[in-house]
Length: 396
Picture 1 (cartoon, rainbow, N blue to C red):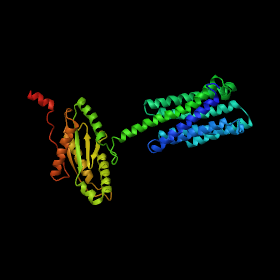
Picture 2 (tube, rainbow, N blue to C red; picture 1 turned 135 degrees about the vertical axis):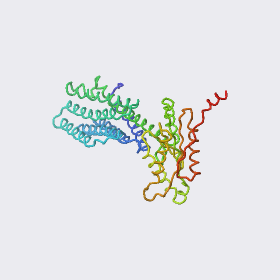
Picture 3 (tube, rainbow, N blue to C red; picture 1 turned 180 degrees about the vertical axis):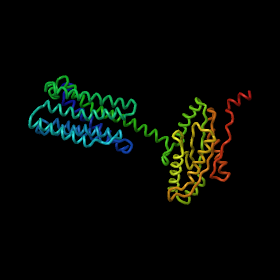
Picture 4 (tube, rainbow, N blue to C red; picture 1 turned 120 degrees about the vertical axis):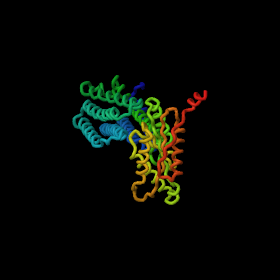
């Protein structure tokens, strides 16, 4: 038994394919709504395993039945992987094309196996139909894949397999039957058999790699968002502020922070329940978001406190933005929501040396003044004092 003995290759790939399908199914069960297509890839691998098992039973069962069943399962498996890739990239699944390819493939296989036996024709038809499944996935990866190593790895594997399948189809059309008969050995036959079986596993690994990359991005995004209102949380806001502060250093343009707090929010929770309080918070976030520019940033800092960062905005324009927010939240609201108001503190940052804690303290001081002066109003913070380094230089 040689290293590239066909039976050995099929047995090894079948065992590893079964293990990989379990991994894919496990990932699907863990993240069913975040990552699509994992279940189709897992089922596709199982179909290809069934096809390999049927192929190995050709000495026990009727040859024609085994060949038709094995090729049917292989087409189903490869088609399901294509559907899985389409769902992963949020494209409409090509079920009609998938079923059409399967019907054409099995019709051609039956004709050239039972009616007009022609081994090369069967190989050519099967190869070019499979080529279509692979080529569709190469297109999806190229057009919709993220520019990342994981996507490049997956794309290179898929492109390589597409080329190999096309070469086999070409050899079946223009070469000899022995050159494409996988069970007779030969250089290309052994190479193709090893490639076809192990590449199916490598492609599953490649797909799992891009799925893991997407899951990582989703988890990173979730770590920066408030789960109730879907706006930035404190961590996400700190990252955004750091970028805007770096821009402030380069462009020497001011930015303004709004500290927004609901008035008497505890009474809403006490009188209407916490579920109603959550509805109010969601409404507040949505209403504020409608008043902002694309360049502005909003976050929920916990409880009923929101902050808004207005890049490249002087204090006068920021006060106008704060008033628009305050009035928008007083406007008629969805039926069932209680009446509420907000107080707003405005703090402008002109010096990049000031940090976020200092800016928040000044905005909060203005907010407390708005609360003390009757609530439902906007107050402006005092300008920031000179940075500590400057004070030290003056004292020296």
